[in-house]
Length: 335
Image (tube, one colour):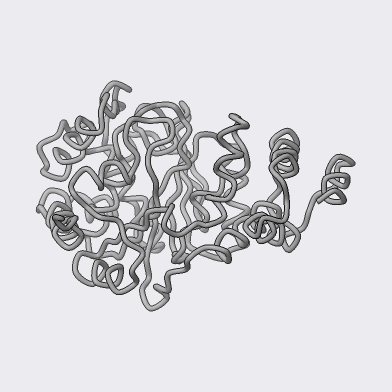
């Protein structure tokens, strides 16, 4: 590590194999906390490069608990988080809309970091017990087109650096890795980022990974399609700025996206959307994100058709049905 740190202080960029090896060494306890802290601080100040990020991603997957879903074509819908907007669980709602439309979804997520309710919070609040059992994961996909991969059950490397990240109290490269370390390595992913710099970084990463991807960001700083402003979308085939009106939606107020003050309140908003009783603004935000997720899977379909597919899933009750099935399959057993 001393040699690595000296090279980085001199401005050198590490290659993909080196950063992958660093993760393996961290997990094996070969470095002390001060050395790891120095590494993370240097990367934070200098800015991480594409191959460095890919190597860390490789290392986290290799030291984690993989899930082989290669016989399925699955999509993950996820945001980087950290936009400090405290929105309701937009991407998780969108997952069930996409599942209700007949597509397989394997969402990787965790508890909230900067908002009231993360994906794990809202799903767990409905009595779901998280699992890393492959048979159960497969059963979920076969029965309700959706499965949830709770990050702490899979990423051993993240656990190894968690105490150091808490002590540092700064944003590190590990904040960028969450969307990239889904243990099933999905062939499709819709990612929400908070700014254009992140969009450029992740698009370079996805190009090297060779997967179907969509990256979205709202111009006013949301890490999803918020409909509070114009938004940019970058995919394998397209890079374009859209207005809400391009989807037939009005621009909405930020207050419509508020995620609540408690997990219970957030879960109520989540339920109202899948039950098709929420405000039009909330439903439209979910439909917009679900539509572009479907567009990632069905690259040849126009966005308008993808939006129609998403709307049918939500308004027919199929999205709610998928969620109810998932909860029933994964309900915590009474002691």
